[in-house]
Image (cartoon, rainbow, N blue to C red):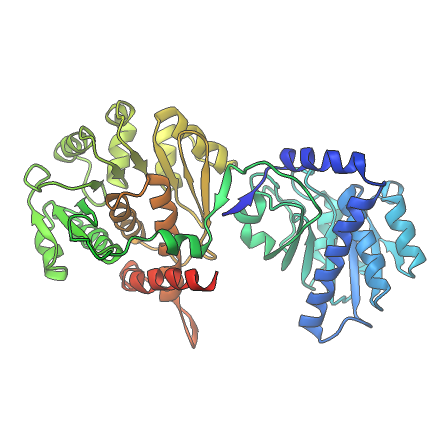
Amino acid sequence: MRSYHPCDRVRAAEAPLLASLPEGTLMRRAAHGLARVTAAELRSRTGGVAGRRVVLLVGSGDNGGDALWAGAFLRRRGVAVTALLLAPDRAHPDGLSALRVAGGRVAPAVPDAVGEPDLVLDGIVGISGRGPLRPAAATLVDAITAPIVAVDTPSGVDPDTGAVDGPSVTAAVTVAFGALKPVHVLAAARCGRVELVDIGLDLPAAHLVAAEPAEVGAIWPIPGPDDDKYSQGVVGIIAGSDTYPGAGVLCTGAAVAATSGMVRYAGTAADAVLARYPEVVAAPSFAAAGRAQAWVVGPGGGTGENAARTLRDVLATDLPVLVDADGLTLLAKDPSPVRDRTAPTLLTPHAGEFARLTGARPEPDRVAAVRALAADWNVHVLLKGRATLIARPDGHVFVNDAGGSWASTAGAGDVLSGLIGALMSAGMAPDLAAAAGARAHALAANLAAHDRDGAAPVSASAILTQVRAAVRTLRAHMSES
């Protein structure tokens, strides 16, 4: 698992090292790593290191010191380095001295001083900083056209939540020190490529983690020598309606593609489902559907009394249940069928549905919001987004950065629900099923969007056609790890 640690835990892990090591050792470790990544970036972008030009944006904190020391190390490799001090009286004294001794320049922190460097290092604020860039810093950043390497975190982006509420830095590369922070996954588009520099921190187990592709591939259910269609999991899908038959087709189709078990469909879109997927066992209602190991209910099912009654009946079982879309709208009106459950329950809202369930949108602190709902309702919650979050009632959160927003299209959520429901029926815990399903779903969307000639917008149907390819790719990572 890839772990993300909140800033207070990182500072707590730094404290014993700061107390035991000679002064400045930890900063120089970080700066060496920063200089190494910056030099590699210069070489990649320009073909060399010596003779290239780097500008440092230097604030008053330790991140400014990291940038100054890195500038000194780069200067020794022949890089022309200019530091723009946003708070000259509070610049890190040792770092500033090291840069000057190495032959680096110091210039006024004004837009005209930026010039045309090959790279810019953002050392404006660090993990203690909150809020948007101040006007002077924002003016400098606006003047930059060169790629930016962020020092630990992009300035102006909240390091714990990834929230942005004003001017901020968008980096091409972010060099993280000691540990990945939540911002590196919650605001991945602001961070660019993230490089982690080990500075010797001893950190506790993280409560925000991301599953690696090989880990997802390793747990994806495939048939064993003694399996049959029942032992591999029977998932029930209650989705679609006369008005929205497509939701039933997409959700059921994803369940068919996800595993080799069996899929039951219950609802009024049976004809449309069977026309596309004749292997599905269809029934007109939940009561007539037969046995399953997990149920998916809600996508395109409507919010009338019949839909509400079906939802209550499904939630009255002792089976794992995933509730999405219209099912969430019904729960927002009456959450009691979920609150009284002891069996595993997974809710899969987008931000608007989350607001209907809780009375408030999940921003700016999406992790705290999803944890609170999971704990309050004693359910698992998958909050959709580029960074999809999956919270358990105990506060543990999986995160999946999709790498883009290709899945932001109508019907994509129906595909995700079918994927996860099939995994739950195979015996996976709801959080693992949701994390694995979200990873495969994002990969399927990326595969659908890209080919050798570039990328183009995709639809939910196109995402569905790539589910098996995505699973195959995830499983291929097992042999590479």
